[in-house]
Image (cartoon, rainbow, N blue to C red):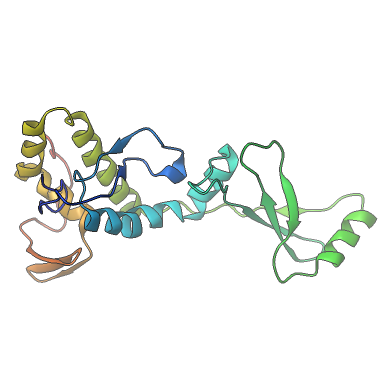
Length: 208
């Protein structure tokens, strides 16, 4: 068995790969150990999924839809109480209804509470997070796309081998796993590999 990303032997790998991260609510659509090797699994989690999941835009949507992480934690929202210049946290608890509002860390909570008790109205500002960059999104989508392709072939080892060997998918693999580019050689996930693709060529016609 070889990894669908780096093509290295992965028969001893133990990591289960979630096609959509658990932090986005996925517990069903997974790849068994070896489809993605342990090294690529760790790299993708750290360098591809984390930048996407940590963006404020995605955090806000997880909060709005109440999507918990695998540790059952819904990311908080940050706001700003205009009258007291206080940082505010909005909290949701998985499985419970409603939203809790509290003062953020290192703030004068008593001043904020007294303002709420003494005022009939106030202003809470909730900044809108910027969307993650095109590069962050496209690498994440590329990762998901290749894994969905592999998931559809789980019952046929010959098709899995074809996915690994298919040169038309190498550009997608390179893009998802790319760390640095220097002349004709790049360092990818601890491996040295030659680049045989045009830097600005669009990722189309990946799968015939």
